Amino acid sequence: MYNLHKYQLVEWINRGPRPQIRKIDIVPRSWIITETKNKKSNLVSYYPPSPYNDLDNLVQNFSQPDTTWDTYNIKIVGGSNTYEGILLMYEELKKGEKFGYSSGSDGTKAKKAEDSEKIYHDSQLREDEALILMEQTKLAQEKNNHNIGFKTKKKESQSSSYATTLNAHVNNDDESDTDDNLIDQENDNELETEKNQRQCSSNEKTLNTRVVDNDSKRTFTRVDDDDDDIHTDDNLIDQENDNGRKKKKNQSQCSSYQETSNTRVRDDLNADDNNLINERKQSKKQSSKKSTDKTDKLYHMVKKMQKEFEQFKSGKKKKFFNIEEKYFVDLPMNMFFDIEAYEDELKANQEFRTDTKIYMQQLIEEDYSLPNCTRKILRAFFTQKIAMKLTLTRKRNKKIVMSDDLPHLKGCILDVLSKKFKSLSNIKDRCLTILSQCLTRASDWDNHRREEKKKNNGKSLADYVAEELREEDI
Figure 1 (cartoon, rainbow, N blue to C red):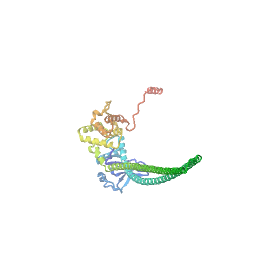
Figure 2: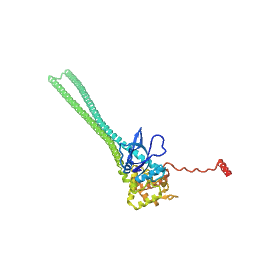
Figure 3: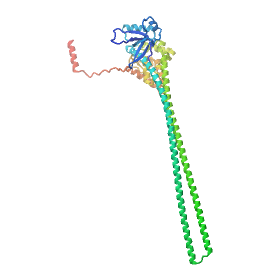
Figure 4: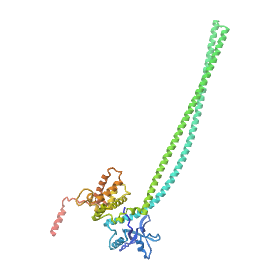
């Protein structure tokens, strides 16, 4: 990412027609902020009121602005990290230059100015997003707690109502079963009594027939009649005993049937209760798991935003990785002399090599695509004009081979990319392929490719006429 310079060259923007002479001034970077008016964010700068006796001291000492000062609309047109350098840029702008930067073409200087303005806008957006995200997480946690309490109450009421209806249904089933059993017992008793009556009537008939036969034969005596009466009485007693046994047997069968039916009902109730308990446990686990996952995601998002915002606000990250201030290097490099000096320094200085890798890691920290990371590193170190004249390994006409002429810089790029995407298979071969493709397509960095020359398919009649007219004029 492009870093802000300590001192910024700004052009004051006023309403009305554009003045013939540009109003340009030098301000520290801490004086510039963003303001939103009518749903549009603009860059403004604090500026002290007159008299301006201490203005040079305030700017040169990098003083913080006073919030009571007025703010004015501005546009960034240059920058430098030293006060002497910004004064030289200021003089160049007075002579007619559009932008005041130490290196680069007009296009790269304009890109630097746009990047500086974008950094100011992004800082304000990140601060607003952090506040909005904190409010959203607070509302989400309150809503989640409310929904969990409401769901548990609702499930408890549903389970209690289900249990009451189930008990009522079971009681009705028990009563209906007992009524059916009593009716069956009464029917069995009636059948037994009818059967006994039939047997008694049949015994009487047999007895009468015997008496008639004995009278006809006149062979029975008083004693025989008494014996027959005794036998009939014994048969009746045996029948009554059998009936009593059958009644007891039926009663025992009815009681055993009632017990089995009651045990079945109890087993069904226990099974239903167990199912209800298991369903409650599963629903509680699922709801609690979903809620914890959501809260964890929101928590990590908020922590990440806070960390990034604090790093951006404190400026520690920029100071640690600012290779331009530490080694007085201007990036991106637009001359082969600078590239050769950079390669010699990488070869001789181990600390410079490690700082270069750290700076590259900072550039691609927020990207997760191998082509985007490679392209961002190349744009940070080379201008488009230089990148179009580089190739990785293949020797071409009027091309510089990085493997032969810039091996240490190529090694730093490959080491950083391999470390970031180490989870990919064959990462070294992939990095070499992507780096070669990015250098080949350097002409398309600004989405402007060269127009292909149209093939000459022959001259037309108008072309011949024009040539003849030219020859006559000569």
